[in-house]
Length: 331
Image (tube, rainbow, N blue to C red; front, side, top):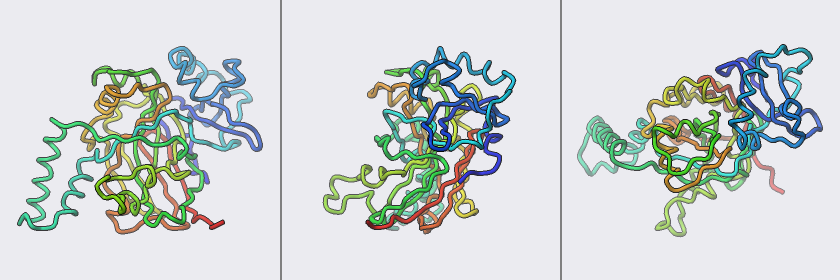
């Protein structure tokens, strides 16, 4: 499934992706704004080059991208001739939770038992104060995802038979281009090669362990089924994104808008998230940092994913995803 006019949807003169022709292996590509494709393996005379390799050598290779984008297209093929895959196969996936102010306020109000005697308006005001305090004094909440959950931006998403409450969570993802370890917030964005779109699907029924509730959340089972992280379509270089902290995140389910919020509602900015992560983890080129999802997931609407559902997802300047949900056929 491909949205129409996908090449024109990203910011800047070019974006990066991973493509394949029918029956052939994938290759890293530069996509010009007009839709023509440059095979980076041919451009750099590197037959085995992958997008992860591009990130490993980001400073050297990225300096040539602007020139490649400006060259006459000539016989360069159109992106419509190729299948679009997830733009990168990362080694590490770091995922932030509870990072949108309005989303967390909604959760705070929804889960109160009423014993506090507060009206809904008062409860929201209380939650807003907690969010302000959290942003000023607390630390982000981050967990680890699996690269094997990643799939392409137009691939079908198989809903496992065991997933009783599959849900969507659209997120801005930062792609690391330079190693980062113990970097400051001020330094953090210099380590980002670009940005892409991630939909962090979650089975709400398996988030909490019923057999051992004292353990808490089970992100392995609830978030890491094959294909539960549609990614892409493109990596848009950071210099083409004016600010990652004010991009509109929009998800439509069967044409109806479910999530529509700016990243400025994030409690912890992209820079703060990367800096925080780097205090513990050595971030590597190609790593993904998912930055959390805004209000409007399926649990909020009381409408979870079903066979045949189509999700259309966009983030300002980063392109568009379209994924169809397909129920798993028992073996």
